[in-house]
Image (cartoon, rainbow, N blue to C red; front, side, top):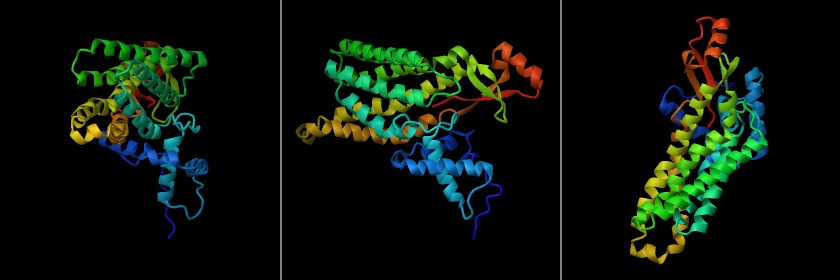
Length: 322
């Protein structure tokens, strides 16, 4: 029996995006690390199916489950603003495999200065690519701005890690294990705003309920970027705070002292266990499509909206990015 797709809206979220639990379920779906392994031809098929569904011309015999799977692949691999395929490493679905390796090694090799510098550089290089890939694409960023952002964030992370390593040399060993998290948190506060500085300078694209562009707002950009910074720090916090405590105790066990070569792989594995839950939880802290009261916008933009819509538009909407 052929499925009735007459009332099916492929862009309608499967879970209520006004609730935290609904957003977590949504991001569990699209940040599924298994989608990283999906072949390019299957991703291209997913995009075609999504576009055909939007036009109401899906092939005969198409099932709802096929369209939902296509939308999952599309959301995981294509940018929500441009519809362009994102690079694999920059996708949120790569956060678990990429993040677990980097986090595990940052937490393991925190004692020597060369190792600290190297892994903080690797982490910020990864973060810069993720931040650029998941930016609000309506605000273009030049190569020069990206280079400055990358250098500034990397310098901040390395300086924080090196400085805190020196300050905590005489502190309990556990305190030294928390240095990588402090460096990551500090760098996130720099990396994300710097990588998306064009949004803060020129404003982020804001739209009405029907997705019609209204203008650009710097205040909306500041809110969106702040939420992304909080999400990224939250994503890293449990693993980078609790895992050092776990490893501190495990390494005191007799059998663990005999298998020191396995300490790093174990940290990588445990980091992945934290991230597989924390990536969707952190991404779901705030709605991706933000709602903002018109009264909070810049006065000139408020005047533009009131002149065109009167008092009929109390809120505007924008994509905060991830």
